[in-house]
Every structure is written in C-alpha cells, then in structure tokens.
Amino acid sequence: MTQLVDRGSAAELAALIEAAERVVALTGAGISTASGIPDFRTPGTGLWANVDPMAIAHIDVLNQDPATFWRFYSDRFTTLGSVKPNRAHQVLVELEEAGRLEAVITQNVDRLHGLAGTSELIELHGSIDRSPCTACGAIYQLDDVRTRASGADDGVPECDCGAMIRPGVVLFGEMLPQEALGRAFELAGEADLILCIGSSLEVHPAAGLPLVTAERGGTVAILTESATPLDDHAAIRLHGDVVAELEAVLEAIS
Ligand code: ZN
Image (cartoon, rainbow, N blue to C red; front, side):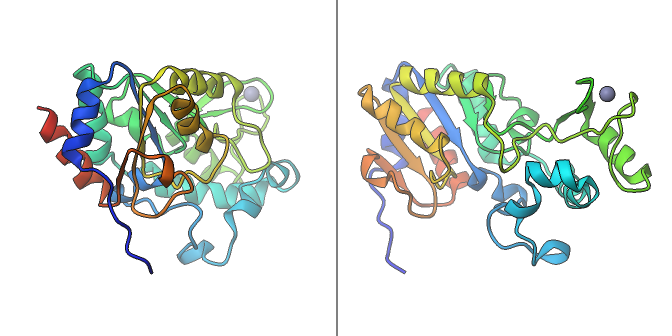
C-alpha cells in the first residue's frame, strides 16, 4: 500500500474556515465508523456476511419480495437504531453553533447528525428515522417500525391503513430526492469552502458537489483515511482519523 501524504494541516484548515464566509460539510460513512457503524459497502459480518447489500436493499426486492427485504432491513434498523453520534458529529454541531458552518450534507442514512443536533441538515439518501407508508404516506418512527415488523407473521411492517411501510431511505435502483439534491448543489455552489469528511467521493451525484464548489472558485478540503478520486482538487488533504482531525481543527479555531 502506498503511503498517503497529507497536504496542509488541521491548523491550516482552521484558518481557511475562519477566513471563509460560507462553509458546508459533505459527510459519508467514514464519519460514523467511530460510532461503530461499518461501511455499508464493505463486506458484512454475521448473519448477512454473504449477502450483497446492493442486491437486497433494492427497490425491486422491496416490491417483489418484501419479506426478504424486511428480514434484511429489520436487522439494519436494529443495528443502526442503538448507535450514538460521536465526537466528529458533535464538532460539526459546535462549528454550526459558532456560525462557522452553514449546513451539513450527508450521504448517511444513520440519522446521527440529527441526533447530535445539526439543524441545517440535508440527508441525500434519506434517513432511517422516518419510514413512510407506501399507500397513504403516513410516517412512522424507527422504534414503531421495528415493533410492527417483529409483530408481523412475514416480518413486513404494516401501516394502520393495511399497506406496507417502507424505509425512508433511498434504495438501490431509486433516484435521490430532487429537493434535497437541488439544495445540496445550491449550497455547494455558494460555498467558498467545502469540507468533505469520511466520504470516499465515489458515489454520484454527491461526489460531484466538491467539483461544483471548486468550479465557482471555492476551496475543497478532504478529511478521509483512504484515497479519493478528487484528491488532486483538494487544497487540504488529511488522511488521519476523522475524529482526531476534526478535534484538532476545532481546537485551532477556538
Ligand atoms: Zn398507510
């Protein structure tokens, strides 16, 4: 494995944040690993070790074989339902409260930014927090969905109207919500600094957001352990643990 060399430092990133007028953050799975959530796209463990999530968490499976879909997704709800935000989520809340961060755009569905207290939050892939009925649109909370799923013979949670409840997340084979996507591109286009945190920047269209900022003359900073396709575009490129890096940035600001 080649050695990944940092460009810039946490202190330099702090100075950029202080100098910038509009800062947005784009986060991916890497910000949640310190909360104990494995990257969805890395090989699984335990019950679903031999299952490709992209084959099961798919809109076609939900429609054609809801029992199989919900066996998988109920497990996911159980795993994700108990995890807590970590210090990296909290640093972003503190930056927002200090007026240093305009919004968080996330690719994660784990609801941890919301639990941490981020108020301006764009969840590009939805959230496990809210699950709509496929017929009447009624919204159910995570714990309620889990209770309904475990109480059903086939494990498929049912709305009071009798129709199936689905996760309020973007499944494989589905489009991203246009409103959230539009807002994300608007924020990225207006930002003079975009902080990409824990994202491999491989999943489009979210991966295109830093380029939008760069094309408008803004600065791209990337805090992620592994290499990304946009590393050459980053003025600041830090490969350390995202919690430690963000702590150092916050400390250098205050
Ligand atoms: Zn309903």
